[in-house]
Image (tube, rainbow over the protein chains, first blue to last red):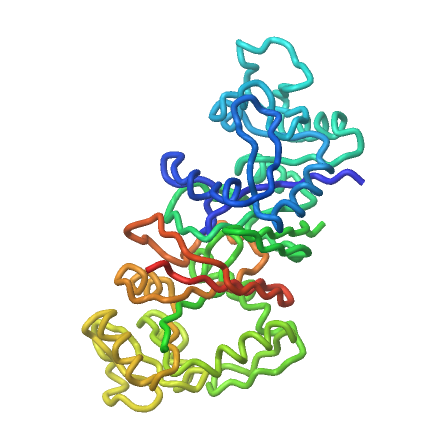
Amino acid sequence: MSKVIAGATMSLDGFIAGPGESGFDLLFQWYGNGDVEIPSDSPNVPASRVSAASAELVQAEYAGIGALVVGRHLYDMTKAWGGRHPLGVTTVVLTHQRPADRPEDDENFVFVTEGIEAAVAKARELAGGKNVVVNGGQMARQCLEAGLLDEVGVELVPVVLGAGKPLFAELSGAPVQFEGPHTVVQGTGVTHLRYRVKK
Amino acid sequence: MSKVIAGATMSLDGFIAGPGESGFDLLFQWYGNGDVEIPSDSPNVPASRVSAASAELVQAEYAGIGALVVGRHLYDMTKAWGGRHPLGVTTVVLTHQRPADRPEDDENFVFVTEGIEAAVAKARELAGGKNVVVNGGQMARQCLEAGLLDEVGVELVPVVLGAGKPLFAELSGAPVQFEGPHTVVQGTGVTHLRYRVKK
């Protein structure tokens, strides 16, 4: 069955971005430190080169993804990945207001203004039975709070950022326990951990 | 050669204690969810029962520990573990002032007031070639900042606490990169990760 999965690369001290949107060079080193090329569908994002261990895991996971849900912040920060997400699937953007420069939904981006439930429902519909991946700390938090989340995938990297954006920023209802990890894969400069959300 | 190792059980969002010293029941579940008994030398702390995978790792590590360094906060919070640390080695307590109820150093506790370098030096001397383990977020931070730390051991547990005490609280000089993990062991409800500090 289609799952809703929050995914994030995180520092050892729990941050998905350092202070003032810093630290991405350190967080995302694992996307460039290996020998296996993973193509990108984005005109702005180069192909990644990851370790064999990372590639074996993420290629299988990527093949199972049918649609993405991201927040407007990530969409803006990446400049819409130049027009298409690297994973080459339709990206549902949760936003208060549609961007003026993209009046029409298309196969690259669909905009939802009615909240996280509507965004995930739209992504499920677009995913056609495949999984929905949710990116960004606020989106992960909202999905978890709304009971929509099935799994959490953390790419844990050996850097201490000291401050920044937590993976589940200002989560209400903490503490929350997960099950697992059911999968632990050690890549080069990254530990891939996969947890299930208790329902 | 003798190593200085910071060790901590940490939530998935990077906290070694929840708000108001909460969350220890969740953080330390892995000490009680297994079949292998690990004895305690403390009159106040019961033997732990950990999974076979956790036991294989930590028993080997415990055998290599010659002395501990803790902060006064941990010493007070645990009420001196009832008189002796569970691991049964001399515990060096870094403090501004010696506790009035323990005028003499003994084989259980040695008090150091001259700062982290002096505390670690004393522990190295007591350890007789074995490793020194440093517990508590402030101690870990001070050791890392002073360049005294060789390794970091994190017992990562699948709980999100949302807030609390970070492993390396208010670290100056962040970001800091580690090497590894060179060891990843999945126990029941805990992922043991071992990193080296870049020197």
